[in-house]
Length: 315
Image (cartoon, rainbow, N blue to C red):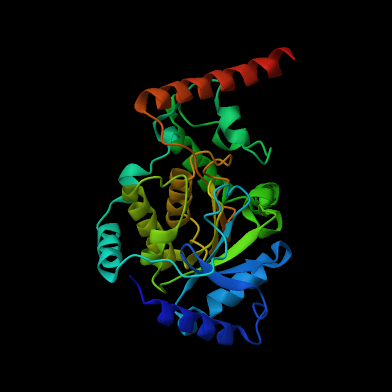
């Protein structure tokens, strides 16, 4: 167990002392299922998380916002006594297994295998933002893979500043904190480690529903932190929200980042080229699909594309 009861209580006093003079001062604080928790004001989540994040070197704990809105068995609540946590040996084994994992061999978006046929380009070139980029890829030979088409869209979009700005403006509701999902009840969880990879031990995400997937998610968090200073702000169960400190450079690096985002968040509505509206990240999870289910989903995507085209032709 990490620390005895006296040590944990003493840590709680030290944490409260560290909060003096910050937006966290005076918030209800106590013991949670994964270390210390505070009851946060849903209207001031960014301020609370940023204050806690700035104190990581002082208190040695990483902040992650969680909600008890759907916590029907009261597992997420302030408790009168601290609960036993994992041993140092268990945490070390978790971090080592995470570092040696290959998350991008498992996290892979189903659309990577899609083929774009004649008449389907407009569907893929319109995106959520509703900005029609069909003209940008009118010379792309078909059939082609969806990743190849979307990379051509992205590369050519970069050469048109006005069009690029329109796309970024159109996807703000997905990528910017102004439109982030906010639960009615929020707990700011301070997990008992300052190490990003190790903190994945306590992250509850439907896209990482086994210990093996949890290790891979921890490695994703570590990689994104190293490459782009991405830090986990919130874990709402089916959604992760990250703050990104360094934007990926336009071109290959940004394309890689967008592909990884889509791989970890397969039901994110944005196309890969739209994901490059960056600075903040939102990740939504869905259950892992069997190969047969993935095939059916790909067929459905094509049927929907054809259906939309027919509606435009005859509507």
